[in-house]
Image 1 (cartoon, rainbow, N blue to C red):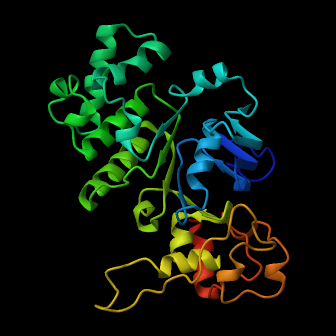
Image 2: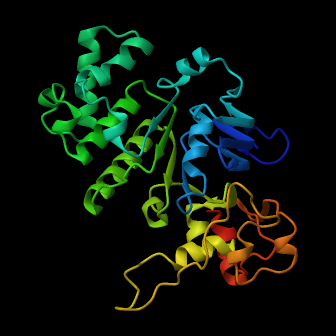
Length: 348
């Protein structure tokens, strides 16, 4: 799954920063085994930003935790998660904890639950730097002030002495981002980082993440149920449905020429300024299938108007439909030849 840099004899390949192969994350419950993530494979390059999108309950957050090794006690993961060529599944807890922070970091959905309410911002920012980077108290404090400034927090000197409850939700999320960036990670996973924030603050936070990602040439996985939120802030998109990937491609490909019926339905159900006043949105009928007993065949088949008999029986494999675009659909959306030629020419 490495990317080709040059063509012809002597082709050089750069291995991806993160390579996920046949990843499964199953959770035990009183009702049975929940197949939250079921055979997912993808790769993320150095300095690349990927959007992971899909309806709530599609398995996006569980997959991020499976990558990090943060599943609950009743959770189990199988497959392969290779970071910089090193297999993470099966590593002892101590070895994994050395990767958290300086190599892979995460911004969680709700900062009010992730930040310690009885510990100052300064301590929460400096602890990781002192442990992983070996900085002294003064150096760590100086670095903390720089980080607060970088994420746009005014009067950082005062905020270092603050507790989470003394700040707004948007400011707490900025602190969470600063904490995640403190040890200079190579990969940042942002799991629904704008949950419960107003629209203006959402945009500020997402623009901040994109700017920091580009400035640091850091890889990022941006998780959201809202497709427009990842547009313009990612290089590539992976669409997830019922524990599996439905489609992957460049952001431009997925938005301009979606090939999976689910991706097409998601985009059609998204409000845009072009919608006429009082017009109805094209809602996706039905609901996600049960993760306890996933149906055979394509998991979107029961909600798809174009499903055939085979769709209910055979599970589709991810296949290439364009350069860099893969789809798991037996009856993908047809793209006009002129559009296809333009996309192939652009290579984006």
